[in-house]
Length: 231
Image 1: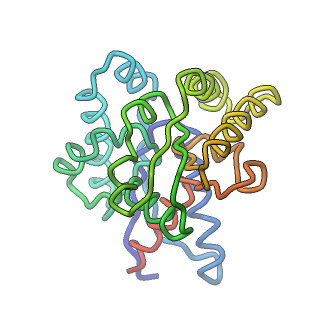
Image 2: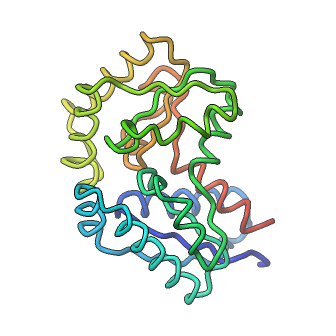
């Protein structure tokens, strides 16, 4: 088949695996006889990136991602995605140094919010994604207001991500209940949708249990990757 090779620069393992799985499922709906584009995955040690985030060493984070993109280009990738939200805090630096075109999760998620006609979107993600207002500018450019959980809610989400979802890909019933309590609080503030702005959150949250449109950032990134590969 005539399609570009997709490079996936993994950050967390669950996020990378879910992205590849979703691209695969999209291909099953689009192509006959089990065809799909070529994929290349580079998955560095997430512990190094996570420590750099904790240490506020975003230069180290950017270097790690650029290293992945360079290796992906060497493996034949013609475009790339990063199935992680937080590292997009340094996406401009990463893109400037990337040897291949990079699809930003920020753009595709903001477009997805606009496509669903959302006006006030709650951002659920890591503490860096939320506190540093990662989605404020891309959403504002589309006339959408970004709403951030309070500090206690941010702490609950951070615990869910790094104590359960990243290491296991699952959440306990108590943790899921805590996440849904945050969503309920955002709805009470007038949010008409939530962005699952950590690629582990769609493993346990969705439109049905949130009760409002829940933008699966991994899925919209997978859709954009496949569209670009087949353009």
